[in-house]
Amino acid sequence: MATDRIGASAFGAAVGRLWNLERLRAVRSGPARAALDVFAIRIASAAFAYGAQVLMARLMGGAEYGIFAAVWVWIGILGHSATLGLSQGACRFLPADGALGRDDALRGFLLGGAVVTVASAGLIAGLGLLVLRAEGALLAGPYGAPLLLAAAILPLFALQDFCEGVARSQNWAVLAIAPPYLLRQGLIMAAMVGAVWFGAPAEAWVAVACTLLATALSAALQAVWLITRLRLAGPRAYRWRPWLRACLPIALTDLASAGFNVIDVVILGLLMPPATVGLYFAATRIQQFVVFVHFAASAATAQRFAALHAAGDRTGLAALVRMQAGLTLAATLAVGAMLLLAAPLLLGLFGPDFRDSLPILAVLIAGSVVASVFGPGEDLLTMLGGEGICAAITVAMLGLAAGLCCLLVPIFGVIGAAFAMAIAATARGLVMAVAAHAIHGIATPVGLGLSRSTPR
Image (spheres, one colour):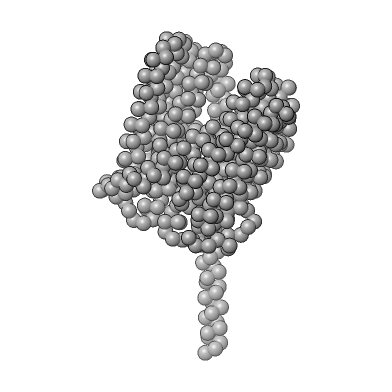
């Protein structure tokens, strides 16, 4: 009998180890594969976008391309903001509602979020046109037609951003990323070439009109694809108070993050000559490939954090956080090292003088690597609760980055801006990790070990 008990115990332990191994493989395979898909699409889209922008610039010339670029930047900023955080909120609420069996709330968020997103973007576009009409000069000048067309693009752009969040919430990485980052870019380029081929003038308003067509087609295709895969029939429940209480701070975080990504270039434009700003900007364009690692990891795992938290699976959540933190750091190191090796060639493509940007690029990449050591603290705050603190931290880090740039650039020149952003990025990662541990009891930095996490 004793032998039988020992044998049974050993068998049970072996089964337990096998189950844990299979469970760990399942946890790793889904997010890791999704992250690789997202990263590959983002790298391809970056190359595609670069080619599209070169083509646009050559077709239109400097002045018209400058108008198009300025209008497109504002479409991006206002379009992402117009979702009111509901795009990221989809990654938080839809997995949680699915895990808890609240299909009525899931359907309510899908319909209500889409309607509010379109209405919000339409309101922003209308108010923008009223402001421009009161100002008078812009609508009467060369920006007039492009801005009018941009107002029509805004609701479509925002709706596609919401669709991206919905697809991410269901772990459909390709459906989330490919339509806005590959299909839309390809359609813009094809439409512009076709328009000029058939005799349209190579002007900014034509480019924006092509963007309107491309956004409408890609958004419609993505929305129809989502509708066919989602279960939309049935009763709906609308929980606007908790939704907006979480999503509005997320929207503020997104807006502050957008500012964080450009504040160094803005301040350099005020303090340094254009040629120096160009050297710095070239380095930031290459450093963006390192940032894609975090984007891919977040797109693959953030919604899974919410689902595991809602299901009460503390062990699975800890394993996923540990896996995400370790792989993100390793991938950031690998991509950063490859970029530094290829930097002389990549910078040289901008022109021979741009090779002087290598020290700037090295500092920016170092900042990204150190920041990744602190793990997915921001995603945990956004997905599990603590979005208000996350927004406050992001705004504070934006202020820190601006202050450091203003302090270091006059002393050290353009390399001072790189050090300022590296320090601010590191501080942001550290403070997010501290906040995530304080609120949720999860130690996110790589190497600390999540066995120290305590249930909350």
